[in-house]
Image 1 (cartoon, rainbow, N blue to C red):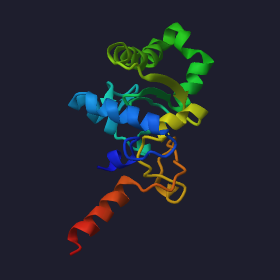
Image 2 (image 1 turned 135 degrees about the vertical axis):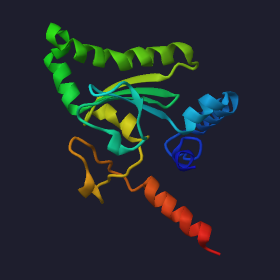
Image 3 (image 1 turned 60 degrees about the vertical axis):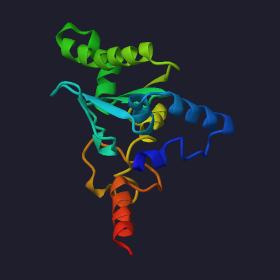
Length: 182
C-alpha cells in the first residue's frame, strides 16, 4: 500500500495525462510478477562481503562500499556507493590484483542486461554514483527513513533524502491510529 501510494499510478504529479494512461495500461496488461515490480521495485545489493542479496527499499540500504541494482520495471538503476565509485574512477578494476573488484563491478551490469533483454518495453538503464545527479532515480523510489528532519541515526556512508514525504514507519503509525479509531 505504501509503495502504491508513492507510485506513478496514484501520484500523477509531473506526468502528462498520456503518460499516466500509458503507465496504467501497462499495469493492466502485465502479469502479477511484473505488476508487483511496477508497484514495489526490487533492490539487489552487491558487496565484497556477500553474494548479491535483496535489500530493503530504504535509504539505509545505501552504503559507500555497495553497488545497488534497482529494478523499477520502467527503469533499471545501477548505483555505486561513494567508495566503489572512487575506486572505479582510479582504475582499480583494470589492475590484475583487484580482480574481485572488477567482478563486483561487472555483476550488476550482467544482471541488468538480462532484465533489459527479456522486458518489453525496454526499461531505461541509469548508471550513477552516490551524490551524483542521476542518483535521484534511485532516491525517488526509496523509503525516506533518513531525511533532513531526522538524520541523527544515520550510518556512515549512508544518504539523506530531502523530502517532506512520510516514511514507512510514519505511514504504519498513521494506519494503526486509523485502525483503532472508532
